[in-house]
Length: 328
Image (cartoon, rainbow, N blue to C red; front, side, top):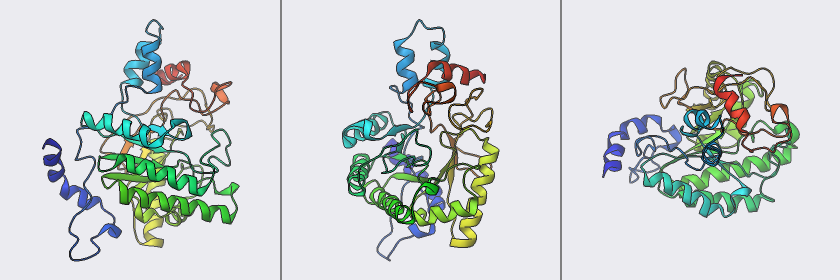
């Protein structure tokens, strides 16, 4: 009942956020997508995140309290890929834990074939488009009617320079298929296609990439995942993308910014640069952004590079996390 009352109260707000393409298709279709924000009482804090697990396992370490209080205790996204094992069970367990405490989980699907084709540090993904279709279908089905936010395949629309036209078309087909799966199987999930960062792809070109990947079907797009650009730089970029979407394709979309590591801005490096800092979060966004979220876990390595030399992508590095709290 508590959730139902919040959903009803938020229904007018949810209607305002719906894209034009989500309008009822016939006179007999009157339902609208509920807002997962309105269905829950705040964002889910993962008790098993890398920082939380490390702090719990190392209570005597002088860095543990700072990491626990400034990183592990805050809501952030959980990433899912081949390492997750049975994806239906993994997603179902995570979303179920959030639902049990009436919180909203943020999930990232990261398993598209040819992943990180240009960067190489996070390569991998499902072996074939068919395998990916089965994987993402199970992902969406595991969420079901429970509320969630899902970011679909970071970097996938910025990585085109390393792909042939046939590979781009194949990737766009997989992304459109993913959006269809969430629409059909997870009706209370907001989906976001990833649109890179301000220094990667021009806004007009990214708008083209988004539309080709089916952005009309998504709730919105995400910016700055695993990067360091300031919130102001990202909102300027997001607003420029929406301007291009509007002028060329006739629609705009909400967008979210990953602020997990942008407190000091960027220094021109993307792979484990030193001197970075955690950034601010906001459920109400600002500057044009729908929300400011932690999508990358602070302290997780980008790969064997920079201050993370010798580490693997996704590995939690306590010293990097500790320094990121203070910005040095």
